[in-house]
Image (cartoon, rainbow, N blue to C red; front, side, top):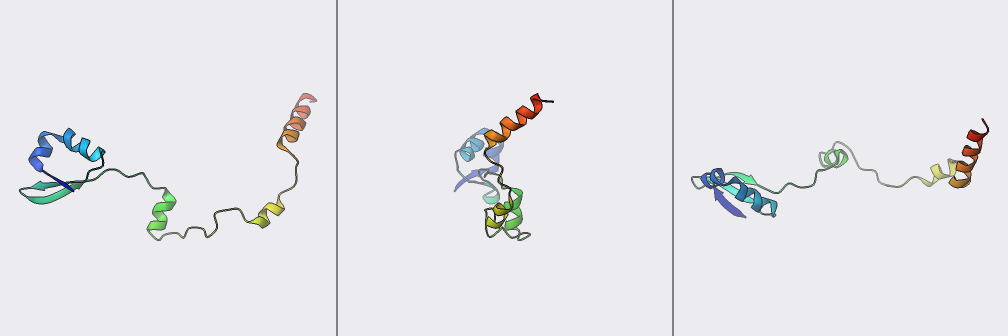
Length: 93
C-alpha cells in the first residue's frame, strides 16, 4: 500500500488517480496520520447481489427452470413452422 501526503495530493491529483487506476491503493496522510484511502473502483454489484450481501434476501437454491414447468408448455412445433403459419395468416387477411 502506498502513502501520499495531503499536500502532494492537492498539488498533483492526476498522479494519484493514475496510480489508483493502475490498481494501487493509496493512503493519504495529513501530518503523518492517515486520513483517507484511495482505492480502485470495483465492478458494480447487481441489486440482487447487494441484497444477498445485506441478508435481505436468500438466493435461489436452483438457478434453472423446474422440469415440471417444462412439461406444462404445449408442444407447438418448430419456430420456423410457427413463423410460416403466421405469415400465411397475415397474407390471407
